[in-house]
Picture 1 (cartoon, rainbow, N blue to C red):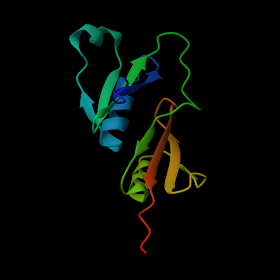
Picture 2: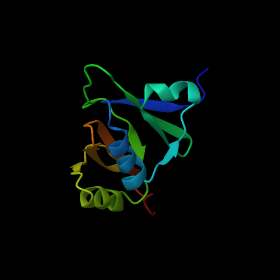
Picture 3: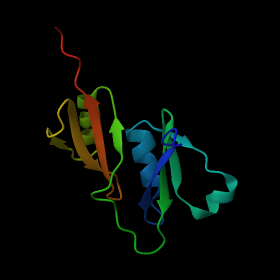
Length: 125
């Protein structure tokens, strides 16, 4: 039986860790998680939001960013997240096609697609 989603992994090119740390920890506010010693030689970096982790693993040959596949990050204060990303030079693209949510897409520093979404507030009777 599957009980939860533990982590999602995205690929990154060699040498991108500092830019990824600046983006995921500095701009998005995720917490970096130390990698187990046996895995540090593989490079990359891991982050946590709540109980879910986002792993960025180094693709040593033929790196291609994920442009369709993506993690969906649920947020509160979606307007503030969009403004923060844009203030740091990351363009966002709003998409109103998901009923009951506000959402937008952007790309991380290596081109991986990210979705940010916030459920609409409950309607008052």
